[in-house]
Amino acid sequence: MPSDKLVQSRARALSSPLRLRILRLCLHESRTNKEIADILDLNPATSLHHVRTLVSNGYLAAEEPRRGNRGAKEVPYRSTKQSWGTRIPDAAPMLVDTFLQEIEGLDPQEIQVIRLGLKLNEENQKELMSRLRAVIEDYAVRDPDPDGVATSLFLAHHLDITGNARDGQ
Image (cartoon, rainbow, N blue to C red; front, top):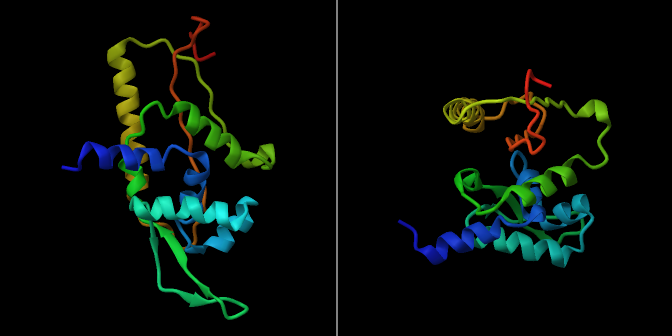
């Protein structure tokens, strides 16, 4: 069993929307620090700091170095998929922020949204979340489709503070 210090370090490594975006970029395709920095419009030194944090915590793995266009050594990085099971304390605001950053610039037609108000007792809420987690887990552990397109899913279940969640409205 990992030490508390290691668990805290690994959770801290995932407590940044930028690091979560880096992991997403490297999920299906290896990318160099320069590629990551270019895609996220970052200074390469900033990107490298975050990449190194993810590597040191086991969330990214360095692959065999290669030569870039100008002959410089480049190290491609790939997600290890270890972040999927890591629990991050009080993650909701950070995950919402990450989601908003990831959809910035997309056309509304490129985002499929489902919004539903429910009124469920505790047992039915647990059943709903358990069933949703099972479906998501099933897809999370599958190998990517060779002809697939990279997509993302964000799900949030929250208390309706208006108290008017009824009839699916």
